[in-house]
Image (cartoon, rainbow, N blue to C red; front, side):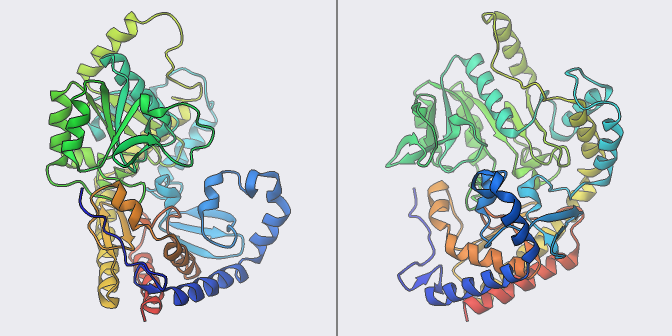
Length: 463
């Protein structure tokens, strides 16, 4: 493991910024935000007390503003709040709306299906067409439909254990695969342990998981050589913290090692679907045994898909036929409902297209180039990473190679101040990190406004 690459941080400086200047900047931007949104503040004070911690989903507490805005509507790549602000949206529901808010073909499909029933635990003709489109888009697989990528990953893990007879899943330090228990482990002094901060966790997760660093093939081989790993579960690019790209040859090495040691390879593309048509797997000709993608795959309708190769499907069928009677532990009642299939069909055929990705990548490169230019001009010790339509600025030198480095590169105080400042200038980016997405509906002018807003903010911070 290389030495962690972190931004300079002393009592006086964080990520190259004087602390006193940062604190003054953050305080001013917070006041500016609150003053501009009195309707949201009043409404939240009047109605949010019925929710735990004042929000319907606790992740909403991660936004750094003094209080949340209340959304009135969203369309394309724009959000409008109840205080009348029109906001260029680069968060896009943290990938859930990566193809834009309510794409017209998906909205039309929802209206059409809503008159015919929402769920009935039986397939439709749309289901058959959606399955064909999934294989055409992502590669030939035997597919199943879930509601979230968390569910899909959980089911894929069960299949891996069932067909291999092995207990453990190998994951990478700092990974993200939803709220799957098996992935909630981390490295501590080179040893796997339950992640700190887990609520209500009583089981020792290390009985079913082993954790190593991303880009460390030697550690992967050491873990696999013990013969108890059913599958490697990984994203093609780490996205949970500060984005980490794979080293040249890393994915080829994973595939070779997994086959050598009899483990399956599961590729979770829930965030890296930004890479291009068919995701990182298709763009880079990877060959996983199982493939998972969620969030935006059905244009924003809660949907995830997971598929397996023909060979693995045969192994699964044999294991399923020979198991004891009872519940398999896979599937949920509302999954594979007709609304999901209608949206999958519309999104895969009319929204998630090669021309759409070409537009997204062109503007993402424009954004990436603009941010790099600003960072270089002010001589900030930061860097920018792009994966297709996904762009991140990272408040530390780069590139980063693993989850440990990514965790150390986070600068929450700097990021919170910047996020609020950008929103005050009409630009919304993701709350959990510095992630920005380009949709097929994003305009060049929106990208240029974001670059200008970023320029204004960090020019002041590095003055």
